[in-house]
Amino acid sequence: MKAPHRSGFSLVELMIALVLLGVVVAKLTIVVEEAQRSHGRETARMAIEDRALQVLDRISYAIMGSDRETLFPDPSMPTFTPRLEYRVSMGVEDGQVVLGDEEVISVTQDGSSVYWAENEGQANERLVVWSNDVSQLLEEELLNGSDDNANGLSDESGLNFVIDRNSVTIRLTLQGEDSEGQIIDHTVEATVTCRN
Image (tube, rainbow, N blue to C red; front, side):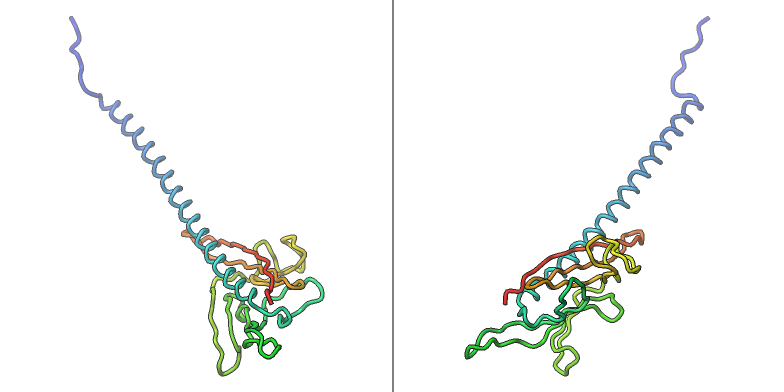
């Protein structure tokens, strides 16, 4: 006698199929979550980079228009300063260079913001904060008296200027958080020449 032909799945086969489907869905969920985290980190990193480049451009344009003779401080050997004072040449009148009001680019007392000011500390002061995301120290720099980032200077602040003849090297590190709260640092650098 012949056994009856069976159609459909047995309960064991159905359970195995469900377990395999669960494993595939779990792995797919892990891959999607990791892709979302990676996207969040990359988006935050790009935002910090864009902000750093915008601030660097503002600083560069301000310094390019300055009169070299008015830059302060004027170090005789390589050193950095988180504060740069200068005046812009407004033109020539009666054979004399006419200079604008004193301008400053610096970080706030707590070191977290970079700002531009004109006539700082006076009644007619103008002040604009360019970023509130400045790192206390340059990327890869530690407060230990050593040159941690191998650029010839030690313990550099998150914004610093190095003056060499007619050029000024600007280094800026901005700091932010990604979607998971991880700290992201991004450093930008430019060397500009005073036109006047």
